[in-house]
Structures are given as C-alpha cells and as structure tokens.
Length: 374
Image 1 (tube, helix red, strand yellow):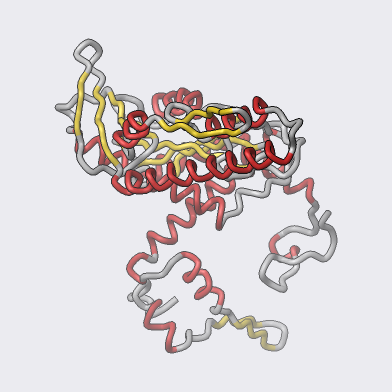
Image 2 (tube, rainbow, N blue to C red):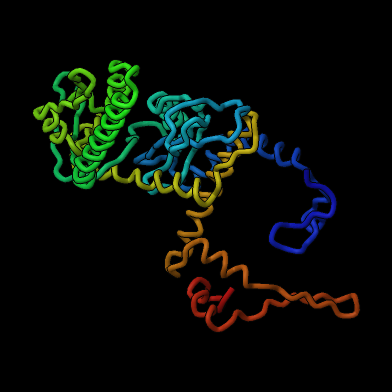
C-alpha cells in the first residue's frame, strides 16, 4: 500500500504539486476499472483521430497469450501457451490495428479461448465502430517464395498458396533432431530392459511410442521388438512426403481477384508483422506481465493501459523519425532538460530554461527550427 509523503515518479516533487495529497493501491485499481468502462469511448476517439473520414481500408488482427504467476485471476485458464511456460494459467489477448500498425482496439479473452473464436468480435467492431462497409481484415502472416492461387468456383473463395523458404530450410533439421531424441530414448529403454529383467517390453515400447506421437512423427515412425530389444522403423516414403510441404502455407480470402490480386493479398498479410511487433514490445518493454490484479475488469484495464502506452511509443517514433531517435533515446534526451525557477524577494518568479548542451542542440534543433530549440 502507498500512502503519505509519496513523490511523482522520477522526480523529487511531492504529490501535492499535481493535486494529489495521497493515494493507495485502491486508487490504482479504481483507475483501471474506469479505463475499462471507458475503453470503447477512448478507442473510438483514437480511431477518429487516425481516420477522420471514419474509414480504414485494411485492418490487421492477431492473437497472443500472456501467462500468469497466480491462479486467482478471473480470466485465468490453461490453454495454448505461446510463452513456453508450461503449467501456468494464462489470458488471451487480441489486438486490432489499422494498415499502418496503429492499435485501434484490444480485447482480453479467457486463457483457454481458441484463436478462431476471437475473430467474430473483431468483425463486429469493424462493422459497427470502425467504418463498416467493404473492408479487409487480415490474420496470421508468412513469407513467400512463389505464389499460386486456386479459386473455388462454387463459393468464390480464393486460396493463395505460399512457401516460406526460411522455414522450409529449418524444418528438416528439426525433424532430424526429433528423430535423434527418439533414438536416444529407445536406447535408454533397451538399457533399462537389459538391466531390469522384470521390466515389461510393452511398457518400454509404449514410452517410446508416446514420444513419437508427442513429436508428431507417428505417420512415419513406429516401434517394433524382438524378444526384449526395441527397434525403430522408419517409413522412408512417408518421411519424404513430409518434406514436400515444408514451409508451405495457405491464405484464404473472399476478396475478389479484381479487387486484390494474389500478390496484394499476400503483401497485406505480411503487414501483420506490425501487430507481432506490438506484442513483442508490450511483453518486453511495456510489461504487460506480470499482472497483479485478479478481477476481470481490472485485468482488461491493465491490458488497455499497455495498448495506450504502445500508441504513445508509435506517436513518439513518428514525431522523431527524422531525428533517427528511438522513443527510448528521445525520452533519455528529454530527461536531461531542466527548468530553473528564480524567485526575487518572494514576489517575482522567473522560469528559465537553460540552453541544452552543444552536442544535443544539433539534434533537437531539427524538431523545432522556428523556435531554435526546445
């Protein structure tokens, strides 16, 4: 709990200077609830700021998860964990952006929510809040080597096929590592059967078979045994068939070819890198986790705060792009600026902003040429 003579973060100024006598954790929780209650209103205002005409030609959408350390969060559940934290409950987060990667709306789902089931609410947002009409909404992304296209004549759905050369090169090595893992386990089980006469072959064989299934190689690998020795059998034809689809993906769209060629569909798909970057930044820099709240409303408010923080980062990066400054570097530069307050005979107060040091003037003068500096 925070009480009493607290100060504004990063300064020696007391809270009274910003109109706060004192506050505690309950004030912070209430603030999260207020943000959640007004989230739709705030998001709508940000959308109108970015798109005064009330329309956006393209929407980008992606989903991530964020694990929780505790078990009492009202949205916590076990699900597909993208953070590699097995055994931890999580929440699922869906982020909707415009074509330039500016965040428009964020939504939090129960931790066991499947990605596909989050899509319907995004369609409703686009239709009722963000312009409606004919829009294109993209999800997932990839890199092509060559593009091919197939159209279902019955319903007009187009399938744009692509191949990711980087992943195609990585997958064979990954399968080989899986094979070596299974071979090592099989050798360990054979040793165990030799050293433990009462151990059953069925149990040892089942252990290896479960590992094959877990590594998704049951279509080409199987376990056999002669007396008390296990052997691994590989179906070479099936093994080679696996490699034919390495790095291959399929995009499904109902946008007519006259409106968007397959190359344009794929290019717009690659724009989803902007959403993935937002997720990485939110987790690594803006600290979407850890989450120290339990109520659903406060959890949603917490995630919304992170989205707003990312919006500020995008704004700073946009404003400082010609200075070749990252937001972090720019904030560090601003932290060196100060103001001197001079009071004469307790009556006249003069505020002076010292001239920045020479090494900094050249960089900042580019932003404010008319003013000659900040």
